[in-house]
Amino acid sequence: YTIDDLSNLWARVDIEESGIQRIKLGAKALVAFPGGASYDGKVVEIGEHGSFATQRDVTRGRPDIKTFRVKVSVAGHLGSLKPGMTVDVGISTEQANVRDRD
Image (tube, helix red, strand yellow):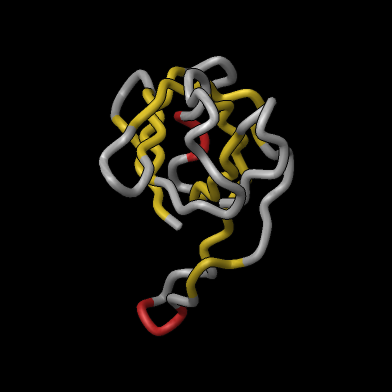
């Protein structure tokens, strides 16, 4: 995840196609940074098209797993975040929590 604009922070999360249907615009998220700090977030964008395959699983008879990019805005950071930081993102869904880490 790369943070570019410190006045408008967001994290890019790649969600596998098996979980993307549970992600909704406006869903609440929790964005956790190294050192234990965490901030509220919100899903502000969901990719329309699948991207690169995250894994090859043809040996078990499954096709490549595609991902969809999800943009999560980050609130309340008060200048403590730096571009390029790694984050853990938990997105609230109706059925479960989807977590991703990069």
